[in-house]
Structures are given as C-alpha cells and as structure tokens.
Amino acid sequence: MGKKAIDLTGMIFGRLKVVKRDANDSHGTARWLCLCECGNEKVIRGDKLRTGEIMSCGCYQNECRKSNDRKAKIAKANTKHGLSNTRLYYVYDNMIKRCYDINNVKYKNYGQRGVTVCDEWKLDRGSFYEWAINSGYQDGLTIDRVDVNKGYSPDNCRWATPKVQANNKTNNNYITYNNETRTVAEWADITNIPYGTLWRRKNSGWSDCDIISK
Image 1 (spheres, one colour):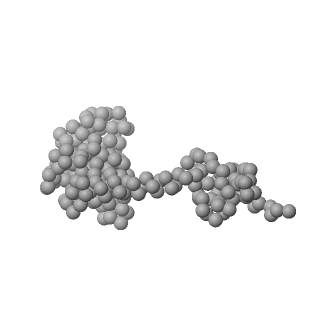
Image 2 (cartoon, helix red, strand yellow):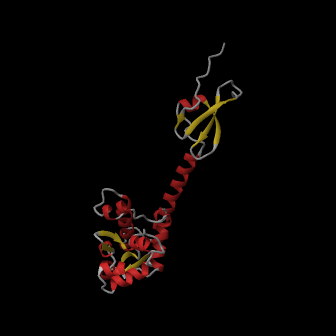
Image 3 (tube, one colour):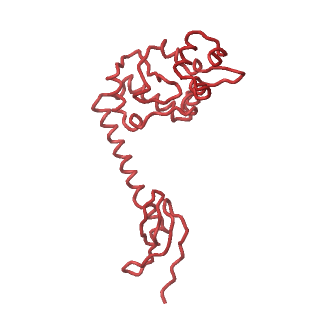
C-alpha cells in the first residue's frame, strides 16, 4: 500500500494557501489546488510546496523580473542623460531619501508626514530628469512642492529660489483657531471655505481668527 499523502489543506506556503487535494500527477505524486495572494489558482505538487521550491503562482518571479528590468532601465537612463554625479542627481537622491529612508535626518518632516514620490519618478530616474530640464531646472534652484501637503509629482512641483521655497515651508501652512492648530487644507475641509480663499487671507496678513471666522 502506498504511503498516505500528508493533508496540506489550509496550510500556507509563501503566497500560496492550499485549498484542496487535486488529482495525482502521472507519477502518482500528490498535487494540491492552491490559491495565491494575487488571486490566481494553481495546482502544485505537494513536495514542491513542502520544500519551498514553489511559493507563488509565478507572480513573485514576475515581480522580480520587472524589478530587475526597472533597475536596468534606470541605469540606462542615467547613462543616456548623463545624470550620474551631477547636482540634479543629488537633488533626486535626497528627495528619495527624505521620503523613504527612516534614518535620514529630514525623514520626520517628509516620509513620516506621508510625503511620497510619484511612481513615475520613483521607478524611473530618467523621467524625473526629463521633467526637470523641461520645467526650467538651473543650478541654484531647488525643487519645491506647490502644496506642501501633497507629495513630489510633476503636477505639484516646480523649481524655485531658496526665498520662494522658504515662504512655502510647512510651518507657514498652519492656522490656529479656537486653540486648535491645523493646516490650511484641513481647515478648508472642515469649514468648506475654499482653500484658495484661506491662503489669500493668510498671505494678506489676516489674523488666524479672522481667516476662519469671517
């Protein structure tokens, strides 16, 4: 009598959860119907699951391949555009670090606050380079977010002088009313006063009380 197969129903192997026993393969080896985290189903031999040889429906391998393709694309873009070792290279590098590197001294003011970099730039340094040049980049200018409550993306970034950027810092974006301090965007949501109206009042020198109550 053949050895009884171990019941794997309900067990999880990597991204796969075993749903039920399936028909044996042509060699009499037990196979199992598995549901992958990505939603795909796949019939897999039990020994492949137990040894860890197969841990997804194939989606993990595809992701790794795409990741390697992206890395190659970025390296190619750096060479094509001559981006490496330029000031613009370091602008990009610092932008990524303050949004995603928890050890970066500026992370608490960016990544920790939910500031992110759009996928277009995060996954393709060359795309950022092309946007920078087409948007008027010059040495001496800094990348500035128009709305400091939003992340880095083509529709929310510009090249600005240090003076302009200083006027757009987060600490200039708060209003205190009834002992409650919130950003201009948050007060706009709470009061239904248009965001632009609040900004104009603030930039015109109105008191915080008048900005909200008028």
